[in-house]
Structure formats: C-alpha cells, structure tokens
Image (cartoon, rainbow, N blue to C red; front, side):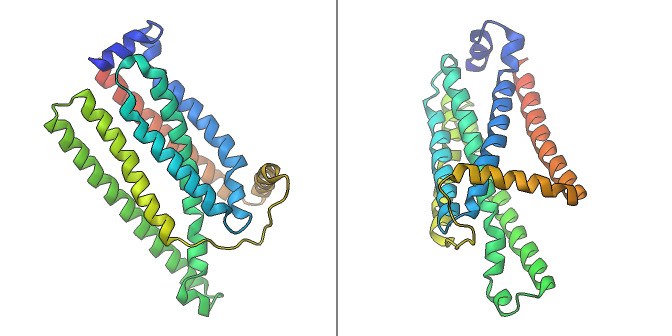
Length: 246
C-alpha cells in the first residue's frame, strides 16, 4: 500500500515517519504565526489591501490544495509536505482576512446605518450574520465529506480516489471563494499605506500585544482558543495516522 511505502521510504525509520506529518504541521503553525503577525494587519491599510490579500491567499491556497492530485506515490512525500504546509498557511491567512470583514458588514448594514449607537442591534446583527456563516460553512463541509466518502466507496478506497478527494477540496474552496469575491465589497480604511508596509503590520501587531495588558482575560481567551484549535487538529491527525499505520 502507498501509506506503508511512505512509512518505509522516509529515512527508513518507522517511528520518525509516523510523526513526519506532525513535523510538517509544526512548521506550518510557526509560519502561520509569522504570516499572521506580518501580513494579517495589512488588511487594515488602504481601500483594496484587505480584499487583495484575501483573494491572493485564497486562490493560492486552493490551487496548492488541488496540486495534491500530482502525488502519484509515496516517493514524492516531500512535495505533499510542501503543499500541506503552504496550503495550511494560505488557508489560515484567508480565514483571518475573511473574518475581518464581519465588523465591516455590520457597520454598513442598512439597519445599523440609521442608528450607529444602537449597541444591542449591533450585537444582534453580529451574532446573526456570524451564525449564518458558521451554518453555511459546516453544512458545505459536511456535504463535501459525504461526496468524498461516496467516491472512496465507489473507487474501492483507491489512492486515486484519495487524490481526487483532496483536489475536490481545493476546487470547492476556489469556487465559493470566487463567489465571495464578487459579492463582498471593498471598504476604505482610515489607515494609509506607508512606504514600510511590512513594518506597519509588525508595528500594529506589537501595539496590539502591548494593549493586551489592559485586557488580560481577552488575551487569555484568545491564546487558549489558538492553543486548543492547534491541539485539536494535531491530536486528531496523529490518532488518524497511528490508527491506519498499524
């Protein structure tokens, strides 16, 4: 089987290769922290920067995910690792920029434009739009998983079926991203782009961290959420790999 060939091929060390995906995932997490801190805040500068970064990361990440169709055997594990790391970073960045549109959608909602000081209405609209977004996202993911499982059953759990499923995730991501690009409008920002645009992102991140001292519980909650999400993904994939390798 291809999975067994991967474990035998990489460095000829079964223990090392079972954790190879985790090593790649660790690299992706480190890169995400750097990219989020440097590029993420740039979405708050200029009129089109936010949407441009969102579009670029989404298209780049979806194309990388579709690139998994080229993983023809376990011998190109290094290519699969590169695709997994870069697509993971791209997905994380696109998600950060995607979520950053929520406050803009709320501020420009027809009901709130009439009365910007109505905080109860603001909270209600935020909860409503956010909930609809989560329902649509998880319903879409569940539908794609069902299609992928059906494909695996029909194709007798073949390696080609796995590659097609991975490619379908990239196609799904790209198609619905294009729809979002067309529907979501660019909104102007009060922050102007400077010559040292990358340093602007780092500076804003640093200023945010300094303000965290005034909001210790918020900072603790966000840190715990990040660690929980990363631990959940890491543990889930580790159990999956160990289960199917034995």
